Structures are given as structure tokens and as C-alpha cells.
Amino acid sequence: MVGDETDRSVSDELAQKRTAMASQRTRWAADRTLWAADRTFIAWLRTAISMIGFGFAIGKAGDALAAGGIYADTYSLQIFGSAFIALAILGLTGALIQEIRIARRLAGQGYPGMDATPLGTVMGLLVMIVGILGVVFIFV
Image (cartoon, rainbow, N blue to C red; front, side, top):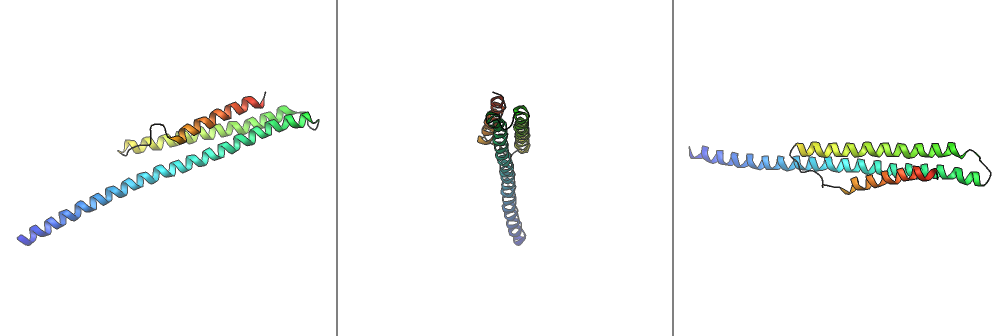
């Protein structure tokens, strides 16, 4: 009888340790999910910055070619450059929405979410503003 109680207390203690370890592993999995979402968002941000720069360069290259008398149709290059910037803004919008959805899903499952205003989100919004201004300045 005494041996059964000792075995039961050891078993209970072991079960509590395993539950704590499983809880910690689950928390680590949630952290990895957030980090993966951040890495994906940063990749989209990097791509958007490149596309905005490329679109702006195409738009302004038409002005330089026209000033040199090499190419007269600057409007088509402005539209082409603006299309790159518009695609970058759309991609960045989708990436922002995806990151917000992942953070909300994890918060709904009881895991602490990301900061109220994560730096990546702020940078994404600033890059979108730069992209919109880039379209405006191509035509000026």
C-alpha cells in the first residue's frame, strides 16, 4: 500500500513535469510561427522596396531619354514604371494583411500577440507611402 502511494506521487510529479515541458514547447512553436511570419513579411517588404525603386527608375529614365532626344514617348515608360510601383503596393498590402491575421489567430488561441505597433508594420506603411509618392513624382 505504501509503495502504491509512492509510485502514484512519482507518477503525478512526472506528469506535471511533462505537462510543463509540453506547454513550453507549444509556446516555442507559437514563437516560431510569429518569427516565420515576420521573416516572410520582411521578404515582401524587401521586394516591394526593390520594385518601387525599379519602377521609379523606369519612369524617370523616360524623362532622361526624352531630354537627350533619344526616345520621345515618355508616357509609356511612366505607365510601365507606375505599374511596378502599384504591384509593390498591392504585394505589401497583402503581406500586411497576412501578418495581422497570423498575429490575431495566435492571440485568439491564448498566446500573447505581437507589439501593438510592430516596427515591421510601421515600416511597411511608410514604404507604401513612399510608393504612392513615387507614382506621383514619376508624372511630375
